Length: 327
Image 1 (cartoon, one colour):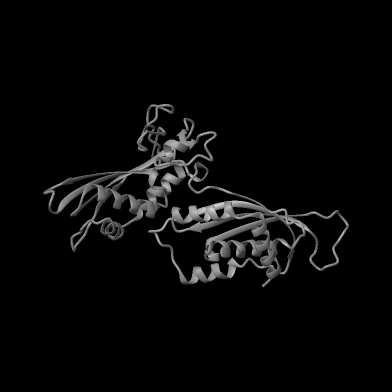
Image 2: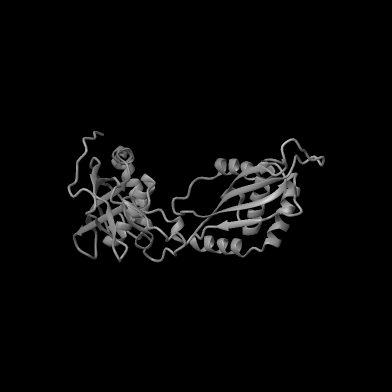
């Protein structure tokens, strides 16, 4: 109905019928639009929601819109047309796409949208939502480039460089967008996994990294994997994997440690097998995993290198301090 965010009902249906796809990492395009209209906050929100869905050809459940409204009329006055007054609406929005290419295309559409076309589309959606546009809608929009440093989340122990928000991330975004944060706290959890499989060490590393990022809900750049194989290169090999996951706080590190320690060997084997097969690694019919999970430790921040990898930074404490944390 009018005044209701169009995405609300669709979101409820999606929650009932769908589940997260761990193979897809949505890429958001965010922005802010301001306009003047004879509409309530709810009507403006519905109008922007529907306008973006139609303009970008995306599902309404992939769009979030938050609107704040300030009345333009003076105190004590009121309109007689039943729409409650003229408001300046500010809509903050996020549109989620399946990949960077789609997000970049969506960003291009929004930035190339003319004021006249935007105001015409908005007027149509406002009428459908129960409001109507003003003679001077004063449409203005800013959209964040999904390929810029502004949307890149720096690795733990790093902070955004000044003045690079609009800079393209490039192939090594941590190097382009971030620098060592010498005052940050970096907590690490480490552990090992040992199992038998047939495949390359590189594919095994990819599989373990994907497993850990999924289990812990952390970015891949905060996870380091080393896989060592023993046995005939052309056949089944024994893999010894060491992992390190970095966190910004002791509480988060302990929660991650508890998550991994809480996995039974059967649960770990099931999760790892799925990722190994997806990475092109062959696993035996009876697949088992031996694992260890170490308590969190504090360490120094990492410095991004020219290749995009990381090395220990010496700006923070030079000696690792082992915290007295108990699982």
